[in-house]
Image 1 (spheres, rainbow, N blue to C red):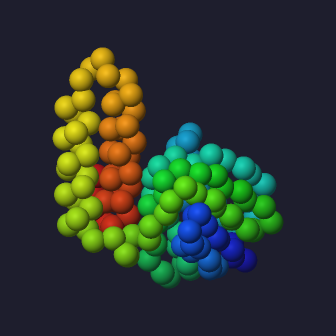
Image 2: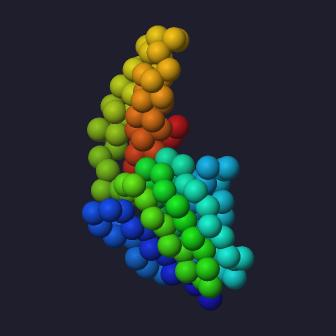
Length: 137
C-alpha cells in the first residue's frame, strides 16, 4: 500500500504522486510517514521534505518554506508558503546563497532582535534550498 502525497504552494502544485515514505520537517523535528499512519495535523518548519516514490527509488528532496501537513487515510497533504524541488535548484547558486546568509546572520548586532529574526529566517531558507539541491550542511 502506498501514500498519495501532494505538496501545494500558493502558486503551484510542486508534487502530486504516490510514494512509499515521506519525511517531514515538522516544527518539533523530523517526522516519518508510512502507509497506515495515524491521522495527524502538524506545523512544518522551513526545511527539507524527503519523498521516496518506491522502495527501489532514490529519495526526492523538496525545500519547504513552512506550512502545515495533514495525514489521513494514506493521503499526505502538505500546504506550504513556498516550495522548490531539489532537482530544479542550482547547487552552486544555493551554496553561494547559503554562505552569504550565514555571513549576514553572524554579522547581525546582538541587540537588534528584528534583524536577528530576519537573518535567521533567510539563513533557514538558504540552508533548506542548499540541502534540497544535494549540498551537505
